[in-house]
Image (cartoon, rainbow, N blue to C red; front, top):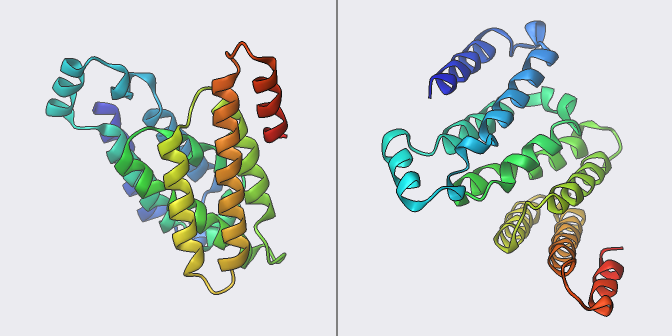
Length: 213
């Protein structure tokens, strides 16, 4: 809780002093995001790993601090304005870590950042696509699922939110929809692959491997 208060102090100073184009400090903002993500994903805050009694006690006294810092990360991202492009693709992995935390409200608040990244690269890269973001998300998703993170609920929510946002966008509706469905099917195959790795049947394992490839 003390640490969270300190991070909140940093956010107000960053917004007040280091956001304007003339004083913008890329490394400082980068450090802030990495610090906040490290805090949010720290094992001592992963409430679902505790017993129900311990979880209830912590929530009663402190609330779920992951949500508090997660909403701050979201707000700080949107505050960046045109500076966002400087954080793509480097921030894709850290934001993915945040969205994978199994807390429904946190996921709903942070998954839309992915659409914002797509939109940002599409508008500012000069290439008229979001290739850097796409490659980075697919690579990092593979690593995270292999490391044991992600679940069926995440897959459903990721697809739903990406499709909702993309379909409202004039230029991103078609490529965005393709990408959302691609990521969803990849995630499904990765989750199947992770589950089946402990299966006795070689045929099942081979079939899952082929699907992922």
